[in-house]
Image 1 (tube, rainbow, N blue to C red):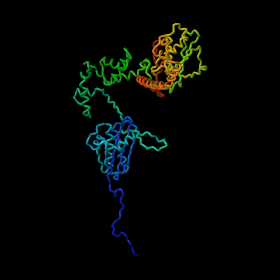
Image 2: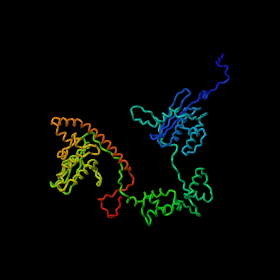
Image 3: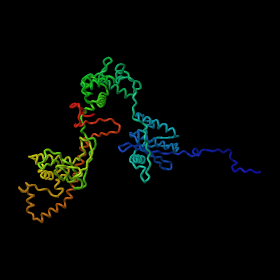
Image 4: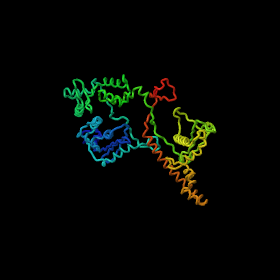
Length: 525
């Protein structure tokens, strides 16, 4: 029997790992993070030895600073490199703070970045060799573009075109929360200890020591009592939290209670000779939570919502209607109501007086609202006010007010409106109305028209009617500018108030409600 061994010169055979047999090659990573008004995004690019690029981007759903975003981008890139089992990595970034802190050349002092620095240090242990290099922003354009894309990308997954999927990080690595530990000591304990023994608290940094020395300059120690030296050299006694609460309650709602506002209450306490660091904040909180201060507070007149204006696209397309009445005394024709209608575009007004105004006859839509502040239209309300003011000044015998309505309409239609910078008459007929006094004492414009032949005068009227569209378009532009000014002026007085289901609120007591407290009834309940 003959045995054939094709590899009889081999002494031994062993199996090796393919990854260990391959030569470890250098990879590069570019990262960048950004935080601005549009949002917070991070991006990183892994570059293989064959110059293949592998981008990774993410959008941060939590508030962060630029430095935190840079650390998040670096961590995301390192995690992607670990998943690809990269052992040698060159990291490039345009954030000098992050690069030099990771290289150990700069000290990490910011409390928000300390945890990031520790986490990156753990990730670095997964690499055989890693180096960090700072480069200018213009040389880091791809990572910067990915960051911008992550911030601005808003396409959802419900569209027909398959969008780019961007990971969302809901939880930040650092929370801006402060845990308070109650040690039973007063807020001025460290200052008193410094005055007595010239010593600082344990584990205090240089900044803490500087703060204590700076605060001590404005205080004076008399035995065991600490005084605050005010700007006018008056000594105010420093009290702890328990004594401060007693003082604030006594000054606010004690024997000589005044229920002053928070800012005024803080000044009353200082005039009484007391001081603590959170004096004004505590006074404001107490005044806000005081029940009597709430129910006897002034009525709120500032608007709670932004102004929403109503615009008519063209003339005589939208009308507003309202009723003036019940009018006393009645007219001589026994009419008690005035029905007012106004065109939103030209501000053309029509009025008519009636003895009774019913919903069925005039097809008026009724809207439910609060009894003391019914839902109405601002344009019609302003028109009603102007018409009433003109009637008051034109009427001698008040029962004959209905006879003055045609003259009131003529006056209103020939006055230039602020919103359109034109008269309603000119926007409807294309020309200005001629006043009776202009005929009795002829003006220059009237004399020119009198000398014209009837045919030429008719042609002139037609020409003015041909130009009426331009006048209306100009009035429309003026109306839009006027509405913008009105919204801007209204927005300065808006104090947004939003309520959610389950919240406790105070209800306003209306003037028509009967209350046994009479003159001393509160404004809210």
